[in-house]
Image 1 (cartoon, rainbow, N blue to C red):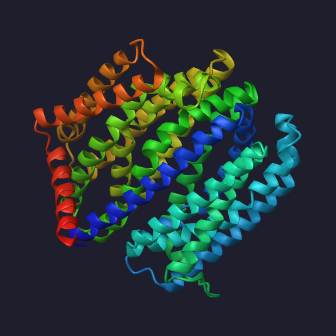
Image 2: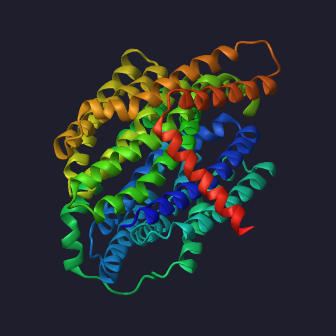
Image 3: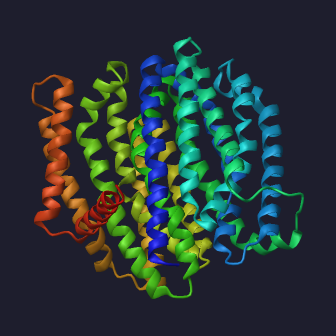
Length: 484
């Protein structure tokens, strides 16, 4: 795989996630101002179960298609029909279990919400294979336009519904429309179309690899949603809304950006899976660049959290600030974990991912139950997420060191400089937030000072990542200038 193709893929994948998340971010702010925290809490109660079912639908067979070097049309169609069958079965389970979910939370409106929101499972099954195809052939440019269009249209519909008093249904409309439009647009623009063909041999070929990723995905989703399940059951709907809102902003900033890099890295790693030295070089470059971009976002968000929430979401959402700061720390190692995980998946080590999920899930259950029933603290539930995330980084690091001879001193050299610079920047930004100024001016000042400190620090310490990113930006601008 040529370096230019990888860079182009990262660029379009990053642009797709960036633009989609800007749209989602704006829509989220508007909806949060229009709707009550309780509306978000009600949706979060249902999303616990729908998200688990969604993970079972998406599973690991899409990743198996990407990892398989010679995946053909028969493989894609076989996995497609398997995914559709699983989605229909799970939707029927959700449909008939909806009254029990209502009874569990003692919230009468959940039955209808569960049955309507669960429809997204069918679209998710279709969409997951479309995304696997796009990653396989690296047509991220098409994904950019379809995702952006779906985000704008669904976001507009959700905002209009909220303005006209739809309450929690505004959020449901937005979610369903996004996945439906995204799937429909991709059906139009990509070459792959489902056909009535299914091979038992194709499924069996990918079962060994895909099953482990499938189980890991399922365990990871259960682990992530057990926190929301416990908070929603033991505490109030408002507590769950504040917790989820605190998690939402670092997710919007980091998760999809990191995942967009992961989408490109997995096929890139897989194509040269027989050359571990090349993969190690690509892994080191990816960790340095992604960490350099992600870490200032995370620590900058921690520094501006209180000012940002009060200004953008209004005072009614201020209780989510402690959760935002704590849960942001979960994402400080997300880029590191994503790159390491994909490097291991590319050489067939899907069992490592499953081991990681089992170990971290057991620890999650223990810590969450202790925090909820012994100390009765939602903040401690958030801190348990940070602890588990740190353990996950240690596990991936151990196997990467073993498989790629990626030494600890090399990991430190690639990751820590950006971490220390981002931490210093965050402390200064937080201190600026204590100055008595109007909120809008204060936030603008914090962001400006944070950007200046990070960029000047990168120049001062001659960080190679900054030089590399700057050179790419200059080349793009020069090319555009020549074309104009």
